[in-house]
Image (cartoon, rainbow over all chains, first blue to last red; front, side):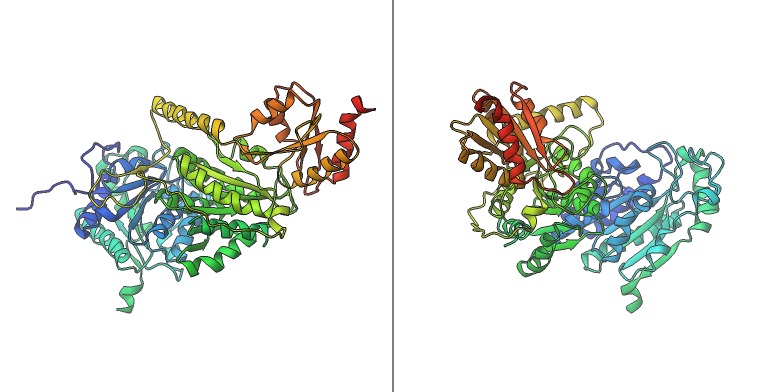
Length: 248
Length: 348
């Protein structure tokens, strides 16, 4: 019988995440990947500004808090300071795809040997539910109270699709954590993203479609269903780039 | 050697193996020098996508416990402001070089000292200081770079070289002394726990106001020590001076000529040249105020350091601004005329 237990690389502390939020699952998947690859002692994590700003209190490895959007640049510095360390950033959609877009694109273009966990929940959570770069057309938020009007605010940014046009990045995959099947696939992808770094293959970004029941104004169950019904059709799951995989 | 190159080579000799920058005039020679040298000494040169990315890469390397620097010029330093605040808030050492040009806005590309306020008052948001060193020669571009790295490590805080386009572009002989490098313990560095210690966290976030307040008070306690122990200045012909010129960087070179010319005319002029702008050599000016009748503040700005001079002497003597701005440099004759005018009261 398999007994579920806390990954060693996650600390036994309560988190501040809302009920029904899927950050907890994603933290766990990152923790499991670090454990299974046996890299906790050489891993350094970069926390963003956003809901996961306090992630540095939850992971047992060395951690740093970055300015809003700058996690890929901070991760670049850490990795270049000591390439034998494993460096990952954990970022939300506002952080990665809005204010930090330049850092994201250029870290990918440089094929910086880092791992990015990109949590896309289509909303700014920490500040109370404003429109994100990934909010869907028509999505109601605090700053799009009549629904995201694409004639005024433009269209959501599809990060994996966009980055896949670059020659730089090694590995780009979009996953979700709203069902057992999707969580299993997410776990595999996250582990691969870390393994790529260990093997020196370069920039790996895993986009994780994540639920925000609090700011979506839904029950946790409905939020998971909303990912299936609304998010996945707009943000199809799958591998967008796998350079070494293709060559193999 | 050019002033900018002297900074780069001195940084390497001080053990800096990581440089991140973004092209901007008039400091580009620093990046170019690093691009050539770093790959040959197993160092890292990386041209970042922006000034913002560069300073955040600096933040990452510094957090890992290594000596690191970036360089830019005025508009680029504004962009780095947020990152400098994070460095200060996380108590991380780093070297930031500002080879100043005229402002505000895109301004111009000619030499200026108009980022004095920015450097000494508010490089970024929040309560903090950075160490600010102002070289007046190519030799000092080198020696103060080494000094800045050392002070930054000693006090775990960012340091800035506040140079200007003239000193950056100027060529002078320079003696590069490797000197012995002090090493500093960095138990806070992110080096991986090796599963042998509790994790290190580098952050400037303190959500409990009393905790944030305590952090700020602790930091300012350290600043008090720095203000007491680290001010640097040069006193030139001040022994019997009645007029004191205050000037740093390129302005001090012009002023030195003017002081000599005034002396030749029998006017007892001298100069105090702040070498550290923060900590400002307050005591030197305070003491001088007991002796001299008047001060002149010679600046390549609309008058910024003059406020520190007035504060240091508690406004006990008149302080006159002698300035050019926008990339213009005061001529020795302009400074001499101001000295003569200030002396005029008693002499004639």
